[in-house]
Image 1: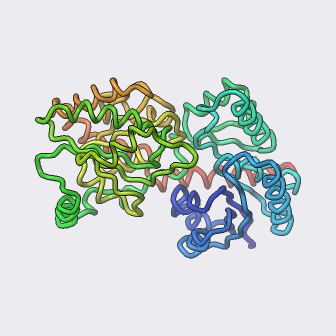
Image 2: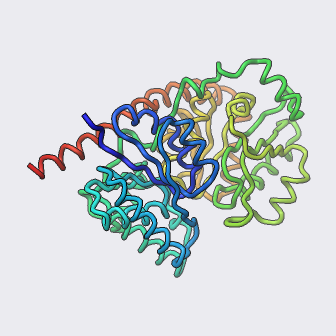
Image 3: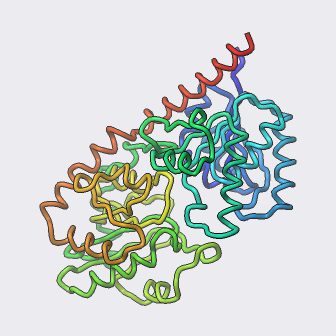
Amino acid sequence: MKKHTIIRITTVPISLRVLLKGQLRYMSKYFEIKAVSSPSSELDLVAEIEGIKVSSVKMSREITPIKDIRSLWNMYRLLRRNKPMIVHTHTPKAGVIGMIASLLAGIPIRMHTVAGLPLMEARGVKRIILNLVEKITYRCATHVYPNSRGLFDFILENKFVNLDKLKVIGNGSSNGINTEFFNPDAVTQVVRDELNARLGIRKVDFVFIFVGRIVGDKGINELITAFLKIQDNSEFNAKLLLVGELESDLDPLSVETLKEIENNNSIISVGFQRDVRPYFAISDVLVFPSYREGFPNVVMQAGAMGLASIVSDINGCNEIIIEGTNGLIVPPKSSLALAQAMKKVILRKDLLYLLKQNARPMIIARYEQNIVWEEILKEYNMAIEQIKEKNV
């Protein structure tokens, strides 16, 4: 029996490679899976790693009407050629282009996953435009999947779409977490010792870690300010480890923050790392003060590695972390509250022990990757069955 075709679309290939890692290969056991994203050598890497076919359609991450119309036309032609049963999009630009093109091409099942909304931090005309884009995307879709309860509520409150199209799959997340891969036992003591030596981290140091894009809306300005308050107490022996790429074009940091990162010997910035596990393994607490998220993989990864987390009180973060159980939750954009929480985990060794003991078991119980994949597979099969019933 011929397998139904499903096309997964993201704006840039790294979303396929990182955010959906392993899922495409898993789904290819049941369907003919094809992936579409902007052209890049990274897209070829996705084909190799996931064992699937890929195609490229150039898409811009910014608001570019002329380029977007060209992308829409190219996406429409690609979908008409391939005639998939399902198109499933991720990320805002791929969502609006993919969903409009799918509707025009007559694709029966059109799914869009919402994993964070940039419009949450937008104002004025930009906010109006981004609101319209979301409404168009959801209007063209047959199924809309916010990947957190917070996003589900936000979408309903802003009347972007009717309730009957909305659903959170499982406990949230777009891909779950591979807890065998993200396992503290996977990083040997030799690797830890070598990394500590290379970074100048001593046994007496208390290491806070941030993993993600080094940009303003991840709360980096507030994080640096908070860390300086902690650093003032020399008895804390605090270090801050920044793991991620500095992006200065879309959302730059303040000049003061950039100078501090460059000149402060207790702030260690290592750039983007393909394997973040060794960095988690030498750290004590994840600090993730983001302004907005969908369902942050980093917080799940840290938990699976046995780390307690300090996160901002935003959707996704406040679903993975339960206050006082596997981490602490602070108001977003508050360097003072962040510093107080950071100080608390240093001074309260009993609390830190409890948070770390609970971290990994709670991730395994709620977000194990295979469970998430099985739930998505059920969604595909149910949608296909409904189409078949309509056509009988």
